[in-house]
Length: 362
Image (cartoon, rainbow, N blue to C red):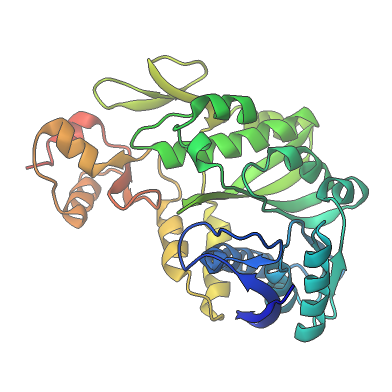
């Protein structure tokens, strides 16, 4: 197989480019490189760099394909840590080895194992699970492979299931009901996060969501992993069901209370403010281009669950849409939390009621 030399960030590696700058990739090659996922890798590098994994720490890029994520972690984020870059495919393994040699990543180790086998026999400070489709087959082993205070990163590309297009599939995979409405992507992120929280609790492990977002064709969640049944119980207390009333109200309950509901899901914070502050500081000293998203997530942190969609509200109120910035300013002036949401361009996160919002529309 003839591979091309590709470059991303501070590393060069061998791969077959697949896809474009947006959307999922389509390739028959196991050593594919999707430029659209650079944003995801930038966030990984920024997060690990902000957390400062140093000497003695072990990181795992578990389903690496070309190995670009692991190489960037080794070179840009954690040059003193040990980074294992794994793929069970033999051709990918050879490409990873060549990439390590070309980039001169002396702290990187190529691995050719089934991920579940590797997780059952190793312990890591950072575990990255980035599969095609659902991460469910790997979550349990990944949680138990994380060291105390370790970080688990999980990607899901089965967006149709998590976002409500195929709710039965979501129920089978995640043991939760998804819902196709104006909050579909936020609900999908919360269903994914909630599944991981519950899987950790089975083992008396607290898996705390730190950063959960949706982008184009995938969901991405980062978690802090800590031992303790008490901590796990505290996280389970933040699980619930999202209810959507006929008048547009939405709330969390311990059991479904409306005809339109989703869950069980994570109803707590999706964006850890302290982590994002550290990531913003790290990103300012790098060449990444994720500043806009980091600041958006930081602004959104601390807001209530389940955003409102201004376009949907306009249809409900049978009126034109107000200017977004004017609406946000009016909400803030009246003492409400009000910020844009990263889950949709027309969404806002606010604690205002439907009637309070109606008064601000033309």
